[in-house]
Length: 247
Ligand SMILES: [Zn+2]
Ligand SMILES: [Zn+2]
Image (tube, rainbow, N blue to C red; front, side, top):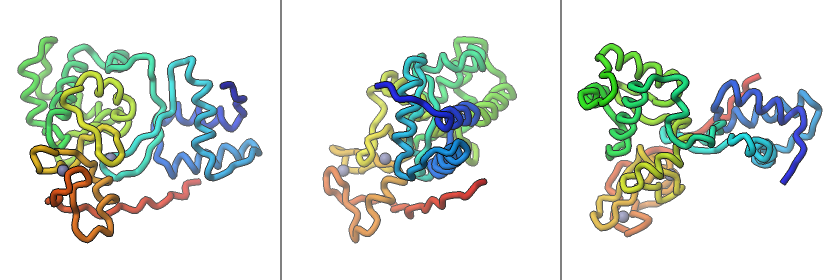
């Protein structure tokens, strides 16, 4: 399918190349801004078509603007991702071999944790089993800061989670590498790390916290959508996403 790209598409893509990831209100505002700048028609419900047109031209370069959800807020994001390399070797221009090994170990910890988090203590301890040059404590701490800065990890009170960008970009890799460990959210069918789990041992489905909030909103008694057992967890509030006016 070949669609012509205009200046508005090109401007949108250039911004995505600079920022890497943008939330949905930000993408809408950028779309509108690009159309206005180049005097082209902007239909608010056509953002995904606009991005599809860009993606049709990016495909031969193994790149794509892909959509995914923040596990924290439930907000949708758009990320420009590289599809040429499906695993973390794409990070090898920015990180040394032993740094990549520690990132892999951190991913292992996060994927295998029920709550989708790895503590800084567990990450520091995992340096003991490194096969490449072992990172010192201070080096590990600096590396974790860099991984947060480069938007691969998020950190809250000493606990690390995979960032939205990392999940969107690494999803194919994670699904292949961790086939047996990784579970999909029962509601949105994306891979789920930070989530609630059905306590019925024969069921055990996972649901992202924001998907829990949306699914159970207004239901008087929360029951598992798969097995109908009582859902014993605290139901989070649905977070409202105010569209930011930024211009
Ligand atoms: Zn979900
Ligand atoms: Zn269940």
